[in-house]
Image (cartoon, rainbow, N blue to C red; front, side, top):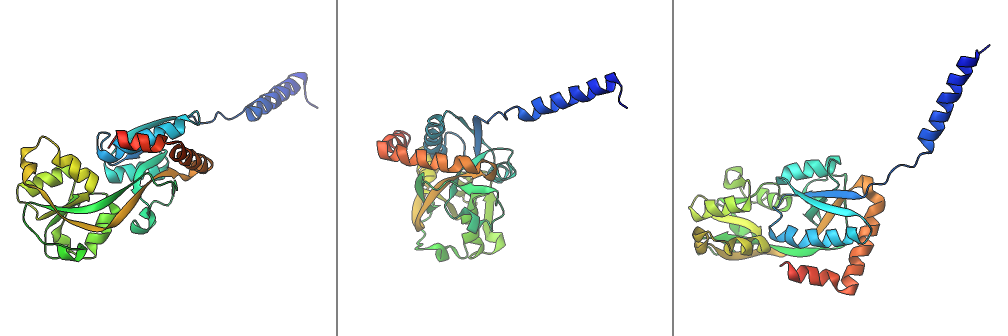
Length: 247
């Protein structure tokens, strides 16, 4: 038979359990997305304000954190960050579904084109025209990596830590070609680096690529909310105003 103190302890434990499990779970209201581009680069300059507005309209805070491209993917895929701000639409296909915890936010945010840059008057009409050339690109760009690995020998593919690094290698004659997107290329050409004056666009490679944000699957319920809000922003003109003011 239980003593009075044992009954009191059991009742106290029961009441504590009821309070603990009845307490509502505090909803997350602050989200951090990551990406492989600096905040001042073309894509984040456009996409971060778009996503910030979409989250704000739902009473949520949004912030962006730059990390090297592959590190960024690891952080977002493991859920240490809430999502990835900018990957191509068919990212999972070109990355062999390695980052399967990331769900695509279906609203297209911007489109880009892969562009080949050189200091020489090299004639290229498509990806196949890169055969035999030394080509540099920003490590972690899975679509570029996938294309180059089908065409070039391993020794002809030079992965670098950033777009500016690639342009510097090109300007100094250490590679024949740099592959980046048209927005990033134009941004670098406008920089104060005199060495970049000799760099020119020699080919547009392939069709336009739709860029989307990706969110971790733990936020699957939020995905449709943000998609709907982005579409509302397109309808009321906010979307285009943000894009035009940050190009």
